[in-house]
Length: 132
View (cartoon, rainbow, N blue to C red):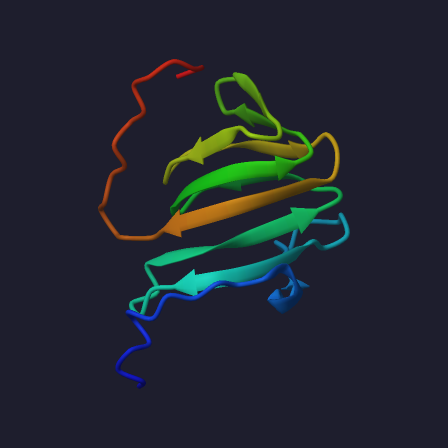
């Protein structure tokens, strides 16, 4: 491994992004989206990237913590208790490990995401303003 790889400062330009087909769950019937992973930890417990999809409607149960910054579009998330949140451009959507609900794109969505998959790790709750 190149010794400076972990400390080298890099810029990924839009023209350098290579979009790949995003993972689809077996029960999904909507067309696939695209994603780009910009960074992944060596132990595969943290990853960070971009995601875009025109249509997605599906139930989910998070097996990891995800924080997403919505760049474009709107998404509606309904949790198992029936609470509905809508996230749009500039919003940060936090879906902790163990959260369950229904995800529905209201319009085509593009987001920046960070995923943390450490077993047994909890995420510090946000305690500022907002719908928490």
